[in-house]
Length: 206
Image 1 (cartoon, rainbow, N blue to C red):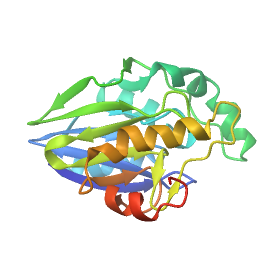
Image 2 (cartoon, helix red, strand yellow; image 1 turned 120 degrees about the vertical axis):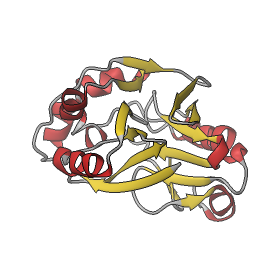
Image 3 (cartoon, rainbow, N blue to C red; image 1 turned 90 degrees about the vertical axis):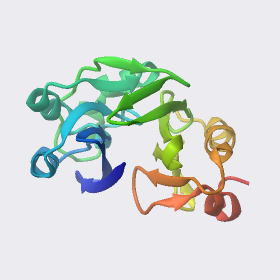
């Protein structure tokens, strides 16, 4: 399995192209459709789905065009659908051009597994930053995509009306920190880290 990251959109979201055996999933395509399309097409890999860690506007800006271009489904936890539906007004509030609001095609649920190529991954529901926040864990690769739940030495915002600091810390401790100290953490913004580093040094999770 190979993991490539493209920083996209005005808020520099980490869009991950995770591929294996000629197939890939797109995680959090926050914008810059052409940049993502060009990378995928030049790599000669076949996208099989868009899997978002949550529904915030800065993570979904390229979803509609990718859905249309590749004919693939958009996956999200059901509890974040309302955030997607309000994403145009949210982006305008932050002074960013309104995005195309995508329709969620399929819901992901806690502990369910998905497969592509020769790899599989598990959905971990990690509410707190948003009600439907999830992580995607590839056990065979000891890699987890955490979106805005966990960053290098930081965590996602919880000052939104639907955010919850207590729930987020609980999610990190019970769902992410239990994956093993050697697990590689791929966040929604910034540099990758490890579970061990965050256990030891993250000031928000003590």
